[in-house]
Image 1 (cartoon, rainbow over the protein chains, first blue to last red):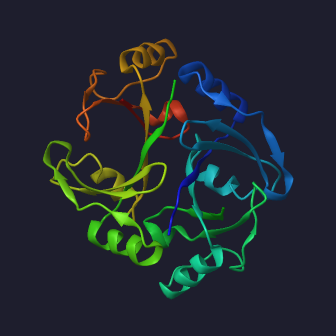
Image 2 (tube, helix red, strand yellow):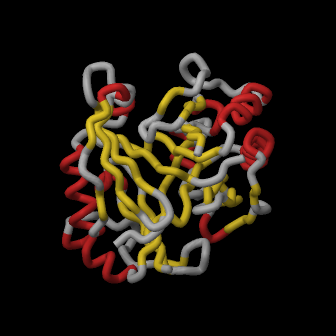
Length: 134
Length: 134
């Protein structure tokens, strides 16, 4: 069962510019950029009343969002992260429904220190889905 | 100021299939499909605890999502709808920051009967943004 949208991630080519744009136009509250070397991204979160927008800039040559930005030069919505209560139960249901989990299929520690998996976008109408156990 | 994410819209080529997929895999609560002739889409909402996912299927030849689905055959995340308190104030800020509002720039009645506008995706890193006055 999907509980909440934890965040919507938007890949951007220039994080500082994107932050300024959201601040100036929408007066958004945005966290200080954080370099996540292990994840190959620098992130900043826009806090909304019910969820967050995660702005992602590639960090390092092997950043997982570099290819996405080569195809979408100006950026784009990269994935939706849903919270689930039991990620192992979710994995069982995904396998039962022939969904492809990215990587080795084993949950790894996400940006919030909680177990996460990513589901191949072909399984859900071109939408890359991250599941995070709450 | 952006208040909440009202919904995230995902364009899909086959709404019935998409509904079944989300129900079977994630046990989601989903509203009955609703044909919105004026908007050129059939919609169904996935209710989550903090926001909604709007699944959109094209309706009619002039559906505004038809071109998107020609480029993304399997579907994709189409737009994010944010709630704002004062849409006319938002429009003033958008114009001040050189953002392009789609259509004639005047709010029209959205799917929830409230005034909405759409902002050109080039202004926010390839993200089509809908603003809805609450």
